[in-house]
Length: 314
Image 1 (spheres, rainbow, N blue to C red):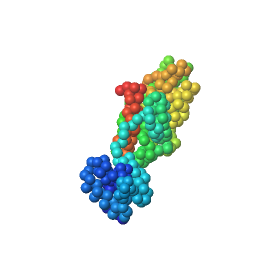
Image 2 (image 1 turned 90 degrees about the vertical axis):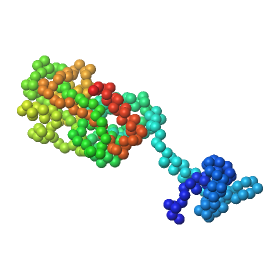
Image 3 (image 1 turned 30 degrees about the horizontal axis):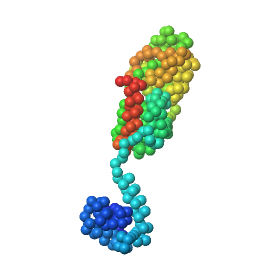
């Protein structure tokens, strides 16, 4: 039998008939006339090639075929009802959902630390699976395998939804005993040794060639504009490593201010304004259009945006 020719309303009729054991009661339950329900029972008998309900002295009695069908029909209808009913609002207190987020070390150390703290209070059973940029491709986000990506992006596919979390300035982090602290000028900056730190975009990173200044990013691009170049001795993709090196060695880490604030209360660290102009950068959140209307995703996006505005006000 071609299932497309079956009137699914008949399954609803059968479910109610077997539950009520009466054509009249079933008709009242479904708010249809008794003749319409009787006609429905006739069609059901033709469909299943079985009387299904037989009038006896005790009322309408189901046949063995009807008894066997009853749990199957109830299960099918229950699954259909669950499938087609509108998605209920996301309840963070009750949810045990896992959200997969691709995040740079910069975003993890700053934004997501506070997001996680908020989750322990507002969504105690929600789990975050934080993935590095090297583990993710654009396709993973596009197909919804990763809920969102949070990073500094040079470019994104046009199909992605995106939201700027914050704009961040740069600062220089030095050991408080570094001899140039009291004479921090462009000349002393350039005569020092530096730590380079960055990781943007998606995919596996490649090694850095220190001679390719144009590929080194924001800080070195601005130095190039004034015909200057810094002496980079360490290249890393981890902000905590850069901060630790700046604290322990006479090396300068020039990095986004929100990352530098991780050490703001450390007496061994000094934060200074760069001796040249560096345009601010933006931290963005990007996600697939497949998740745009997902209730849980909407809730998490709002939480992340709220945390971002609190940590780094516009």
